[in-house]
Structure formats: C-alpha cells, structure tokens
Length: 140
Image (tube, rainbow, N blue to C red):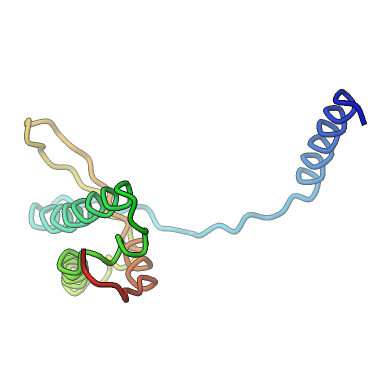
C-alpha cells in the first residue's frame, strides 16, 4: 500500500469512527452535585483556608518528589506527618460541619498583598483520595 493510500485509509477510519460515536449517542453519566457552599463567616473561611493550605503544602512536596525522579507511590505516602495533619483537619471540619461532607466550599479572603482571593475546596475529592490511599512505604 502506498503512503498516499495509507493516509487516505487513516482519514477514512477517523471519519467513520467519529460518525459511529456521534450516532451511538452514548449517554454520559452525570453526577448531580449541588452548588458550592458559599462560606461567609470568618471562622468558616479560616477553617477552609487552613485545610486548603495543608493540602497545597502536601501537594507541593509530592510534586517536587515526583519531579526528582522518585516513584509516585513513594512520594504520595512519604510525608506521614502532613498526611495525618490533612486527615485530622478534614475530620475536624466534617465533625464541626457534617452537612459539608462531599460538598464543594467556596470562599473569599484577602491575600498577602491585600487583594481579594477566591478559594474552592472539593471535599468529595479529598475524601475519596483519603479512602483510596494505602501507604506501605517509609517516610521520605
């Protein structure tokens, strides 16, 4: 088969595939999520920010570890103190606000430069990640 014929066949396959996918109308499973909870009380905003800051600090360490060439499994579990702090913070937040479980929190605060900053914290995602994380490695 010539190069031109191969290219033509590839285009034809792509067109047929996209046509079949369009005609199949495969339903996409949607998760009905309620809108984010808008936090306005300063105490609530501080609690969400503390958890978000803990999550961000852990994420930065894990990212740096992976970029340094270590296995992701080792990096995710290599900071037990930070993982425990994140878990404790999550548990306390849900204990104080059980209706926040699996919800997304939206909040605003003033950044270090005095400008308004928006924050979002997806508690469902955080809970699921905690549930699926199994650590059997030594700390980094």
